[in-house]
Image (cartoon, rainbow, N blue to C red; front, side, top):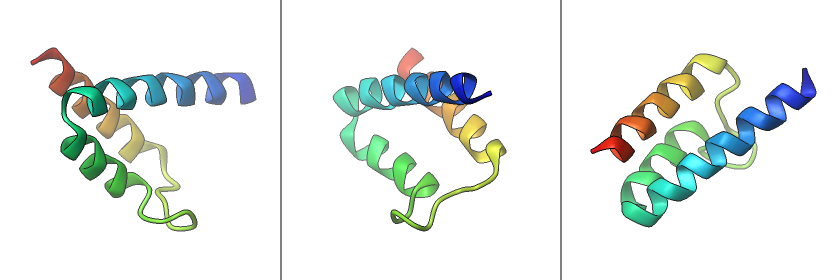
Length: 61
């Protein structure tokens, strides 16, 4: 289970890094929706899945 979570995190990081290279403002906006501060972040999985789909859609444009 930990390896799956780690892999998902690595994929999310790679997608967000790719987005930041193309559109840094959009990457920051998406990041702030998920991780508002170091202690205030989404704890449910659904917002992360929604954000991943949003990032993929932007990268496909």
